[in-house]
Amino acid sequence: MIIHAENLVKTYVLGGSTVRALDGINLDVQEGEMLAIMGPSGSGKSTLMQIIGCLDRPDSGQYVLAGEDVSQLSKDQLAEIRNRRIGFIFQTFNLLPRMNALENVELPLLYAGMSHAKDRAAEALRTVGLDDRMRHTPNQLSGGQRQRVAVARALITNPAILLADEPTGNLDSKTGDEIMALFHTLNEKGRTVILVTHEADIARHCRRQIHLRDGRVVDGMKVG
Image (tube, rainbow, N blue to C red):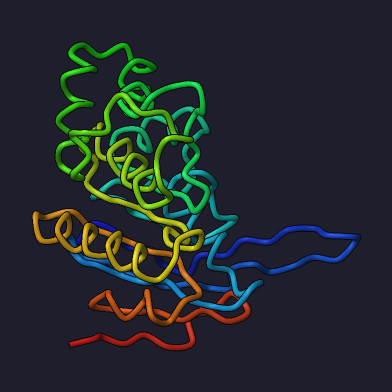
């Protein structure tokens, strides 16, 4: 098991009121699984994603990632685990506009002071089918190509988990299906893939779905 979350609680104070964003979440994810986390706005799915991605900590409860309890680690410790174990893909791609695809993908390795960054970035771009677009800047790429660059960047540190937040939200349906096919390929090679989405058509690509409402898991089902 790569993720074990037990009784996660997270609250925020908004306008003088306390909002319970997560209200006792329990979740297990097996290594190599492809999972969709669904729910309407305000259901808690973004908060859960932040905790799964080690971007935030729960107020209470336990979160075990790859056998390590990370529930109450410091921000620096969380950053180290996040950089080592998790690759992020976002709806808005988050690419630097003045850098070409190769330069965008190699950035995480450069920040980490690792060698052979350019060679590894080129290999990651080949993995996502962009070997002929390495020198193109984001404004020279289609939306689907930009998302592939973002996937390549997420892969560059060889993470065990790919965590994608609305990865097809800015794409047309055909391009979205192409990106989901890429996620399937990566999953078949052993990556654990977790998608946060409100789109039922996208969630159906995953083998399991969990649905959140008011900070709780209200439904979980396997597909196929």
